[in-house]
Length: 550
Image (tube, rainbow, N blue to C red; front, side, top):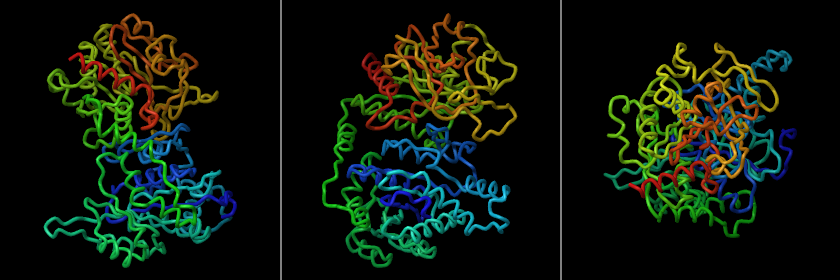
């Protein structure tokens, strides 16, 4: 253990969940990190996911939600997006692990003879690998917050609970803390909050040898004092450590609410740290004030293909909200299923919005609807932002409808098209050549993570960024074919952002249009409530300006 716990001041907080899933453990972790930062502490956040996938990269967005991408090219759970947005600390490869990765490492070690002929078992080999993930790559962090995915009682989560129990045993309880997030259902007919589900959840956690130090109770109504006392008594937790976590109008209210309930104070008391000094949450208060009293409201359409689970666009949703905060406006999002635009005229669906955004995606379904939305934005001079697949569809729309190449398309969907968008098999990453094959693995083989982009001086993109060189995060397998650059330029679509080697178009802009930009990367992944991404700030401002013209 000592080889990992190099910093004697680092403390570990483990966040588990019970009763039901989707209680907001990720938001709870991010919010706690934010209020600890407000007290002057340095934090790190990590996610341990019990599913057997190596990462969420090959999962259906309608099942799992967004795939978040870090600068170093890790495909991770969307909770890492919450972590970054709330703490401002960029996540790394060492901050996300799954059971698939854990078993992959154990099996690789076994094949190399690392275990010296031992029989490989969940305990100690799998749990040791989990502990290594938790405790490695720690520098001078005061707090390392580790969220355990799933709920207590899931068979997949048992090795993780055993691992964190061992960490607490080996490091000592003065350096570890367990926070359990549970549901307190309200029964309207009885007019009562029911504590029994939480009691059973804590009892299940205790069966694994873990006694929670704090219970975070998700509820729709305030918790009466007698119910708090009951929970404290039956769950063996201090009454002041039973924290009310009511639903909030905005996720950015959560740090304020938790601090108001004394959560950060009780965490500091647990670790024998000073706890009476005030917490500076002024930047969160500023954001909430804007959200509560905006100067106006603007409506923006997001035309995508994963509308059955809007968490597929979580970072995108938040980035638009951030753009609104920067402009002191409320952004109302109209979610439009792109397949709908294949059946109905775009003007019937998009005539009540001030801007249109087409996000990333994979596969053929709904692509024609995206192209129809882009055509509508181009012809009616409506501010447009295309991201990743959305940019590619914008290029195809220009090639088909302005250049007259009717079979212009992407080889992702049609091998026999005019290959305006093609499979990328070679590219440079930090001076090293990356090579992929068409028939290779799908998982982890895309152009992933942060890459530099050179902007054309004087372009709208350069004006928005205020620089000629940027770094943005990518997640895609297909690229705009550079050989069509001149044809696009003649059609009024200018390539204003290129990879440093000049081979990969990164940004396109339409001339003779008030605001029309397509980007191959995912700017939403780097947007923060306190540091809104400049593209979203400018895009929302263009939408506001357009709404004033209508």
